[in-house]
Image (tube, rainbow, N blue to C red; front, side):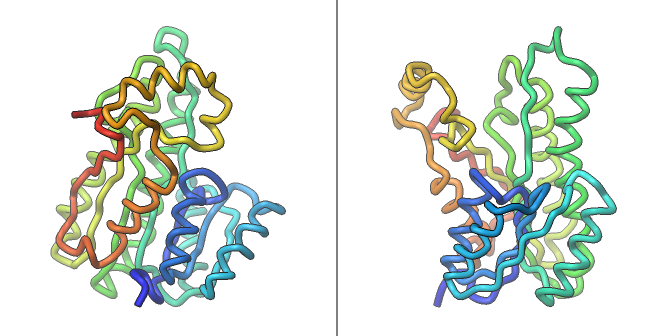
Length: 248
């Protein structure tokens, strides 16, 4: 039996990068996938077809996780389409880097809204069905930057740190109802976004990591799979740093 056989999953921001990798890993392990993106297009149609090839149900939704009403409408529709929600992966996120002295209020609020409000919105939206079924796993994507900070990313760091506090408090509130909530803090992970970086700089950063390499999307997907599955049934309120030892 596959680790997520018959489970119904919502993954936000899954049209590319880490979210896409998680969706692929979950589909391989038998999960039915409801994934979100800002706008459905040819790429999301291709991803839907690719994920469906694993014999699972897959639906792409155009939804803004940072909008409270949109998040509630999404969950209501997923319940209608799938019947239940067993796992929520809050992955949607953005960056808008700048030194604090140059950062505008709009840039700070924008990153906080997309990264943190989306976690609140979706988590609150899935609570009623999860409480009713007395089970669920919620996984929030934080960042090593949310644990240790990073110059030029005060807005991003603040949002990812807030996710950690939210995760721990949610775990304390919902543990008695068999609903688990954990966070993942990725380090330097190679995605479409990092491919545009100077390769000499990437090599220099890699040397500062104890494992002497950057992480892969699969590294994060494997950790997310673990937290979503019954293999982690006694784990809640935790932050798993997937960073190659950067925080050691």
